[in-house]
Image (cartoon, rainbow, N blue to C red; front, side, top):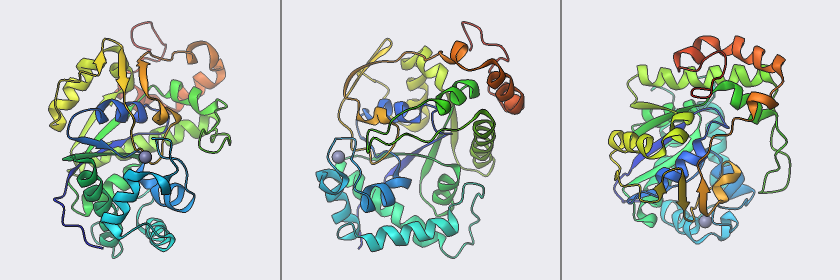
Length: 306
Ligand SMILES: [Zn+2]
């Protein structure tokens, strides 16, 4: 069960779903010395127990990368291990609670992640791993448990996020529809998740915030600024103007674009300007206004800042 690999640094991508964390992970994950892992929080249920596909296309249990990681970290993946971690998660890793240092189950829970990160860095030949699990509560657990975690807090205009959550999208993993939320639910989750990530920063966890819109407006400048904060190679030779060349990545879970390989256009999707019903737009704007303003999103979209 032991892994003597040196502990890698962990870049944790946080934010509400549909805010661009998967795209950012893919872009940062092409940097030398970095191994992107996808949403590790879902490794236990969707990977180990359900055998959903890895970003490379192979089912989790047959992916050579994850087999090697499991063997190195735990002597192989087992249902007992996954169920144990899921049980611990119920106790210590709750969305609405930033954990305290004193929880008795915290060390065992964090140790499982620490083993995954160390083994993945060793197998991937990396000094840094990216976990795009998104939830502030897991980032809080990792930091409280002593993991060298740096949080990248990704925010996106809540009206664009609300538009994304109301759309019909099929999960490529199993063909089932992805979860859909209405405007009120999206607004409440958007506010709660962003507040929780901001709170981490005030508790001493290193947090750097990035707006999805800024990433797409000037990918190289935004990635360069992040590279300086995170100690990454600033070259980003896979990004030219507004196109990026993406290789295969062993991401365990995440948004469907984790399967994308090859050239991608980094263009902003502003369809919410016209496609999000006016009543939804007003509702989301009203419910998220204080935080929306703090992040610099205008009440009415303009060509430059919407
Ligand atoms: Zn794979």
